[in-house]
Image 1 (cartoon, rainbow, N blue to C red):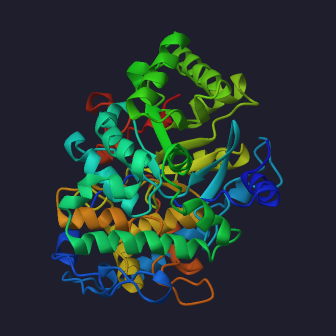
Image 2 (image 1 turned 90 degrees about the vertical axis):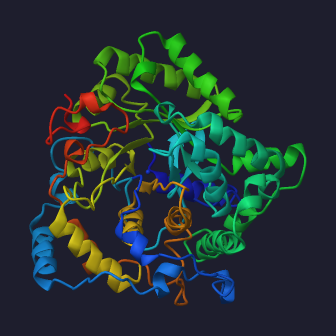
Length: 477
């Protein structure tokens, strides 16, 4: 299996004009309300070069955040003592010469994944996990306006029909045809536009982007050709629910085709199994159905979510030459899933991040959250942005989320996008939002293996599936 970077270099050599703008769904913590209690005008936010300085940078936080150097030093010490992936990679598994998970201080917006042909996933998307269906159409519109082109969907989320309403308008006529913007305040629209511009401008400063990125991101012409171009510029990821997993491969294929029809999407860029919480027979039969759909052109790439070493080993035994393109799971500095990430890196599987919910709540890792808050304050970022930026620099794909019921939530859609975490430019391609090696080491030292059971997350299962605070879907054998 060719590593993603090799695919990218071949693609660039043959036809460089195919880059476009860009999986842990982030909840907006309650302290964000005090930090951004009013929507500021952003008419002056678009500075030279079209780069955005968001409100959270200039707004002074009202909470007291004192840098706890003892906590930071303790975290740094834990990070230094932790085994590295390279040291652990001699466990007898296949070891490619270069891992397909490549950390970078300032990665370009796209990551090549394997599938039918060369497929490229935007590194930062938008997830509809826990987004109320009655807000889904509006959230889709705001995300598209902010430059997001990767939408993370699922049968369990129950929002595809509403998402499809905005998608149809966008695909038929571009952003100007999305009527939902008619009811938005002008300053919010300026903020979304500036964030989209920031993504475009920053991409020109990353490796192999430049004019290729602009060519792909440019609005296509009107008419049928324009619709096709807009569809090709989107990355639609869909997840099959546990109820849709079946030993009847025809039923699985029908479920995927129904999702394509509901979204009006012609095809899906990625379809994944949402969780391993069924049984081996259903998991493998469902995966085989996805392979068939990919080979017949209905799906470009196939993936899994919340898969630990047990279900991954099943796939390796049955589909060694056809492993998933991506494994999306609960992953943050507080639970880094080092064993799963190592397996994925050694097998050419991209890692996606999703659902860092309730980490800032009363049951969250309070000490580690305070360390993260110190870093966020020093960087002039929201804590959610630090988590997105951390995953970006680790080489993962991230799908943060936010609702649209409040001004703070609508702003967060833009803040946590690719443009939102690449908004302060210091020249020569350097962004002040880039986390230093020391800051990354501190965050990496916060791992306390914080389980999904403790979070109460139900992304791919129900509350009844959670067996206790130490329960986690990746522990399923």
